[in-house]
Length: 100
Length: 177
Length: 361
Image (cartoon, rainbow over all chains, first blue to last red; front, side, top):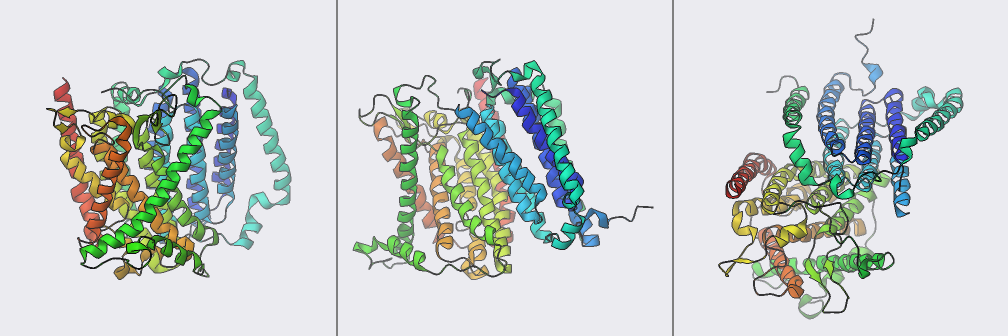
């Protein structure tokens, strides 16, 4: 039997990897992918705790998280497409016109 | 015993694939590696006795969201990041960061693991508390979704509609109808 | 009607003698081996059947020379493909070019894993206790089939991309857009059947269709859901990229579309994946609408023969449709999927839900 702490460490590691991706990568699409990794880590935590407590709510929340992630990915990618059309670049450092 | 093997197998696959996702220069490879990571997570959900979440993960994440990412990568012909610039500017490739950063990250992970395992409760195996027969059933999930969580359900459906319209409007070329 | 039951593992909790810890992997391994080989044999037979039936519909004999009446033709085809030169375009992505057909064929095989094809049987008394005919019996089998077939999109879209050629890319993009569009109608017509059966497990859906009305008409969902059946079959044909929805691989239009640059074994895997997808779709349609292995008057041990006959009938209809009906143009195809088929399946679902509620209240 797997202790709960193993699942929590795994999901914390995944979340950290996703956060590292958001900070370190200079490609808009990879940043969005890292956000998806983070959301998945959160899903894993919910399901693990739900199973631990014998409650079905853990799985129900993941249902909503997945839906919100889908909506956010769709809008995020539409933004990426629109941005790419302006600057022909996927590097977030290329969009600096609002900087002082 | 086989549970431990599958857990470590899927966990290693998920962590390895995620590390490669953020480390790849080619965004196409990143998307495919993330699909592999989602598959591993789906296996973990099955092990946590959540079959519906596992299948929904494949259908929604690996089967729909990642297809969206793949289309965008192909549509934009997303360029591979230039190798020389990658080596020059990538923070993880500076010698100081590479050595000390990795050490610090390893230390933090060890500390986190020790902290989590120090909480006595969390060392109980998942599933010891509850009878598996009462934990999940797609019918129960549906029932709860439509009775206790009706508001969230309806709000989510409006959210999806708004996102759909928003995505179409944002990605439209200017001057098109 | 009963709820979906417990966790995703074999229903027999104690396991029985046949499912004890050592014997169980052997049983499962044997079942996997048998099903895998049966699927490969089925795809070989389909290669021959397609060309023979096509020939007879065009008033000529099909392949006639290899073996008696051309029966060894599939072997000749496979040998020819294996001996061809393995080409790879220079700009093609090294890994993805090989990964794409592998992904296609792997998802095709895996999709059949949760499809049951026979009742519980003791193999005429050979075994101590009955085993279920089917590789795995999970209680979300319908969703697993749907999930794995939606992963099949990747094989095609990656094949289009990795070939580094514009014909392939367009073919790949169109094929994947078509497949994800028809997945909606597919899933919604599935949902109506799930409402009727009250379960997501394919085995339970089949078992809900046993028996007859008035001793004569079998209680198949075909009679309760005729429109749903038609929608499901059309969506299934579109999912497998078969005529009349095979625009992505049409020879006349796109020079064989996404598999233009493929040759030899990598090429052979694409049609094989297509045939096995056809078999899976036919098997799932049989389980959902035609009562699986049930037929009034046939005992349970011979159910798998009934199942085979029904799947064969479906496959014949697939081949018949290909060589009879002209191909849809791509925009007609997409318009049909989104504007006609999907609303029809949603209306079907609503009507089924209303009827179930009314008849149960």
